Amino acid sequence: MDINNFEQAFKNSINLIQVTETEWKINCGASFINHQPMDIRLIKVNDKWYFSDKKQTLRYMNDLYELNSNDVKSCISNVLKIYGFSIQSGSLMAEIPTSSDILDKFFDYIMCVAQLANMYAFFDEPK
Image 1 (tube, rainbow, N blue to C red):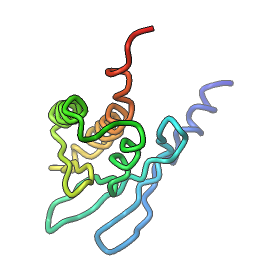
Image 2 (image 1 turned 60 degrees about the vertical axis):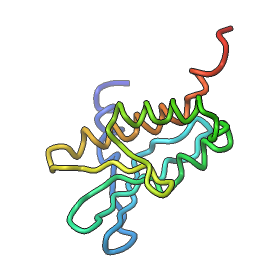
Image 3 (image 1 turned 90 degrees about the vertical axis):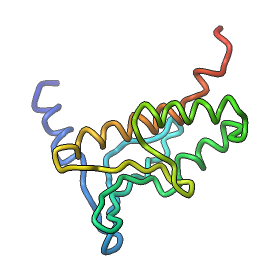
């Protein structure tokens, strides 16, 4: 293995597929721990751009956590606060304020989804 293998692996690793006039699916290879691909969308609402998960993260979390538990709600709130994202009608939303923020927000979005999906690490007792 050499650097060419890495260059090839990273080359064209993210692409957009238009779904509607205001929505694109982002294929990036990111997945949950169960290998289910993350469904990340780029959406335009009025004149603002957002990353959205189409409610996928909360659906995934619902199988692992008691989402109505105060501890879980608090943890979700704290993670969202760290990234400055929100949940709107069940969808994890991240506004992209400027074009220079696109990649930073995208990588933060993936990290936020991962922290939410893997919160069990904070609730399980140490072994």
